[in-house]
Image (cartoon, rainbow, N blue to C red; front, side, top):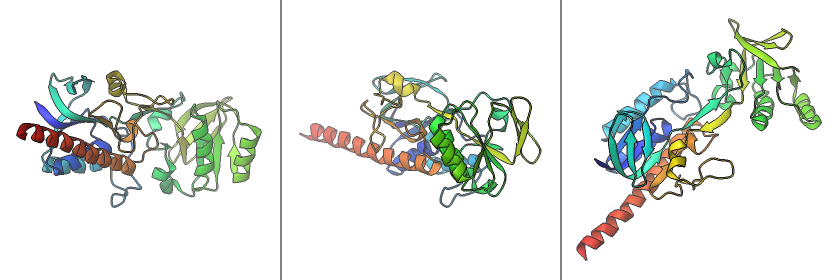
Length: 302
């Protein structure tokens, strides 16, 4: 089987690409493993006209729209992509693509703190732009992690939504100037390693070494963002010094016919930005395919 485009990943970026390409009357296959990054988040915010929608509902609506324009969707995991752009799936199906979009997103690596993963997406949050308004004017905490710059910035940023913010630097040793900036911002700094984060009815208890616990309504955490770009790396896509796959403004990689869209290539991408990236990649792919179509037509005629 050959498709104009095979899209790997059924999140906002992948579905947006599928929608645009299918409306352009391209033959599109979307392969989705069914493991979205935001599966634990109850609602999404900051997406114009979709603010407050359940995260799963956005994906369901997107799939229905793409299917309505002829996109084929299969649930499977892609094992590899060959140099000739044959996509090999774990269900035994191999499909040939003229162009491939990898929209497999990223995963959040949380600090190794007991109880944190269980509260992730509910009372342990990542993005204040996504969830800050919902916990505004409450007692908030920010837990530091290996993503040092992000954690310190997050502590200052979260103060915008509450006058009562505690920063738990944990493994982060603050420089004097960093400490002054946080304190001037009105952020209280709680010293000591964080041993656990416990569910505490209307909030969480942040337990420090020695057993002291500080109650917060919610905590924000800065995870390490790890792109799910194994398919791109194995295919030979060039990477930047950061380790992330290099792309241009429309998601083009160094491998002809291969695009990367959304969080797999852009760590801070919000859902609305991921959807936009999918749309940009789709338009670029259609122009790429159009040029191939014209060259083939000219060759056939003359």
